[in-house]
Amino acid sequence: MTQANARPLTGQLSGPLQVAVNARWAERLLLSIALTAVDLTTVLLGFRLAYIIRFEVGISWFYQHMESPLDFYSRLVFLLAPAWLIVFRLFGLYDFKNLFGGMREYAQVFNACTLGMMLIILFTFFDPNFVIARGWVILSWVLVSLSVGVGRFALRRVVQQMRVNGRFLTTVLIVGANEEGQAIAEQFQANRRAGIWVAGFADDELAQGSELLPGLPVLGSVDSVATLVRYHGIQEIIIASTALPREKLLNLFQSFGAADDITIRMSSGLYEMLTTGVEVQEVGNVPLLSINKVRLTGADVFMKRMLDLLVSTVVLLVSWPFMVAIALAIKFDSPGPVFYRRRVVGVGGKSFDALKFRTMYVDAEERLARDPDLRHRFEENYKLKDDPRVTRVGRFLRRTSLDELPQLFNVLWGQMSLVGPRMITSEERARYGKWRMNLSTVKPGITGLWQVSGRSDLSYRERVMLDMHYIRNYSIWLDLHLLWRTIPAVLKGHGAY
Picture 1 (cartoon, rainbow, N blue to C red):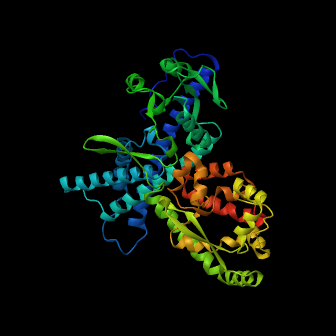
Picture 2 (picture 1 turned 90 degrees about the horizontal axis):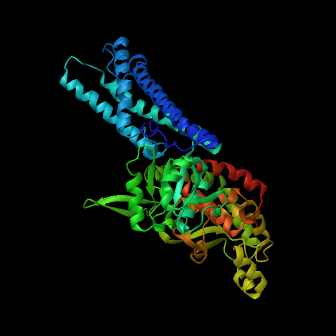
């Protein structure tokens, strides 16, 4: 790997700090070796499986009279396996900045395997004596891509768990301790699996030793970055672009832009969009930033939608008799409609009606308006414990979360997701402050981190932070994990009122 082979600037280090820096660079080298070993093993596995399926299983689709010399394919794979690793390197799959990037990394694996197979096919045109089974080529293309992806996924999970325990971390210096720099640091601290350890800030406005966030001091001025890099064993510099004048930005990139052992990055300046992200596109050879209108794209969208459709359809088919019984109970308990339509904000800021079983009296708003103390407590958290507006049946439905069953129809219609941030009204959206734009990039969910972390017992700020954590850390595995945790959370009923 490019960065794994680079040497840290440790000339002025000594004692425990020197040991810590050397340990982090040793971990990078170990990760490089482990990744190469995993790739080599899975490439060989993919080729071997392709041979077994093509020549030994006896599937009728393949031409069975072709010879299958094991020695020939063994020698061929012996040559192809290291060639595959070279292709992976050309595609940047051993560059640390591209590692563990989720679907982007797996797409690059597929592209690299596609190029490798195209080169094999091209070689057969130049050498007529080089004959290989087309079925083996196709199977190898699919199985090598799949096996390498699975191998890297498994290694990714191991490394992420080790990062949580303080291993395989990248030491980062954030230049600029303004609001943007602090927002970047907070996000790194909230996502321990990212493998970032922030040593501190470099800032011209604050005195050395100032501590804006717990454990993150100002280490020195912007002009002393070179010294800080050597002294603290910094591996990556992240610049909060709104904190520095243009001249100092250029000086930093001129000093570290070509360094082999330091990665330098610059934030977009739109720290409010940290959970959404931006994309660099060249227009007329001019690199320009554009804001991602949605948080999830490509395969993430497809997998999440398939999960939503599958689970919601199954649950509706199983629960429809209970829903009929609930509807009858609501009608007998108090006058009014069975369903309550709540106008909430969805993707792109578009409003829609979220369905719920009605749990309140029809004159709930009038009851709230007549009691100033009740209204004040409601406006603090948009939740009330022992709410006098809730009906007898409504209390049971809220405690068991059965009032939310009709939202499965919103999921089928594509307005909501099974898992996501809390659904909120347009008036409530203003309370999210600088993070409110991020809510428009994902669908609200029936359940989410707030549901399994205390529900209504949480403060409003805690709910906002949980929503932002979900948006920036989304994965299909997180959705499955939260769905599984929702079951005991609902059964226990903590925070449900």
